[in-house]
Length: 105
Image (tube, rainbow, N blue to C red; front, side, top):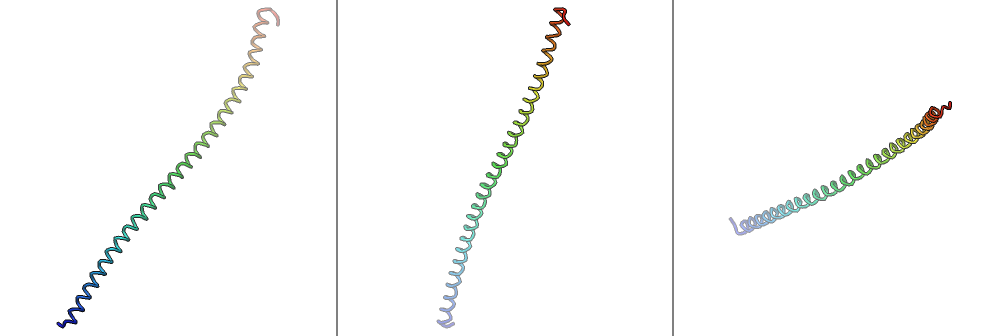
C-alpha cells in the first residue's frame, strides 16, 4: 500500500469514529429530550386530571347541597302543614274536652 492509501484509510477511520461518536451523542440527546418531554407530558396530564377531578367533586357537592336544600325546604313545608293541622285538631280536642267537662255541647 502506498502512503497515500494508508493516509486515506486513516482519514476514513477517523471520520467513521467521529460520525459514530456524533451519532451516540445525538442518540443520547434524543433519549434525554424524549424523557424530558414524557415527564412534562406526565406532569401536565396529572395536573389536568387533578383539576378535572376537583371540578367534578365541586359540581357533585353543589348538586348535593342543592338537593339537600330542596329536601329540607320540602320537609319544613310538610312540618308546617302538619303543625297547622295538629293545631286545628288540638283546638278541636280542647273544645271537646271542655264541653264534656262543663256539660256544654
